Image (cartoon, rainbow, N blue to C red; front, side, top):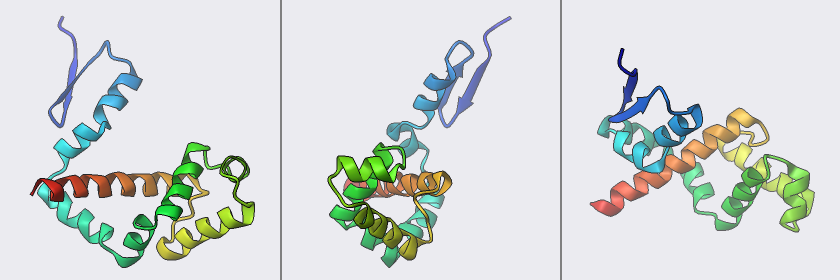
Length: 131
């Protein structure tokens, strides 16, 4: 009997690979870019190009706060302490994202969606830079 292999988007996964190895391979930026089709591109670009999304993505201070919040496991106390930011300031910035997008980054599911939005924005940027 041969080894079982799973093929997803031109990636081959062997049975002897750990789940961590499979996840890291599948969701690597290089693989996401390779799997990004033109049909997806237009749909995602419409969302990314929304004025409210662009307002957040182009606000360096706000994005820095969001990245710090993500790095600190969505913990407002730790994030405010490590960034020397008053907790109310952090909450104000997170509320700004919620007001503009409807995503409450304090909720794991919403944070994952926003993180994917950032990744997709980076992929779209890489596509437009290549042209």
